[in-house]
Length: 199
Image (cartoon, rainbow, N blue to C red; front, top):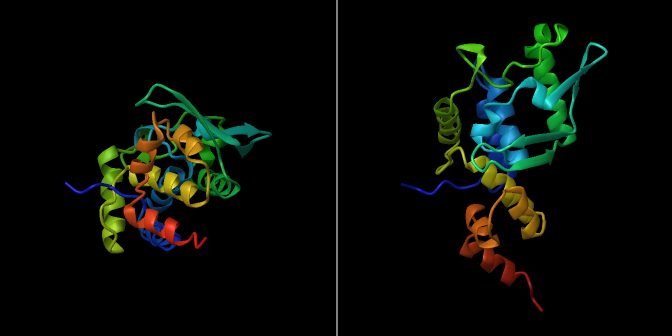
């Protein structure tokens, strides 16, 4: 079995988004992917999100929260992640387009990423895995799985010089070593770092 890896460049991310946008549930699929790579929440947490987790209603209008705060299913730990302006905008467009009826009735307890079988059921984990794999295969990207979104989040933070201690905390890992291995820091990455010194 191959190790699931992060996406390591924005070009690959954009190709995935383009493929995920296709089809009847394209908006849902690309948004759950965007949420995964921008918050590092696991699929089990993302697929169970309700509208009320990300939005409130003020004066009959949807207002996207600044933070997503959840008790993680796997760890039982609470985690709070700020939502970027871009992600908040994507959420607002998606909710206004797909959930107007519920927003107008002040009903925010529906699933943000519903199953194709109905609004009262969350998206199936296996379905999401299949959707991600199909998009990856379309683009010649290998070793992609549901953890690739979390790994991509951590990898890009690392590449943006965020201290490993912060990434470790955001991913709720026990050690920095686990975090480095998880986000896919390879010997090649280490070699490039050393070669860039030129002291």
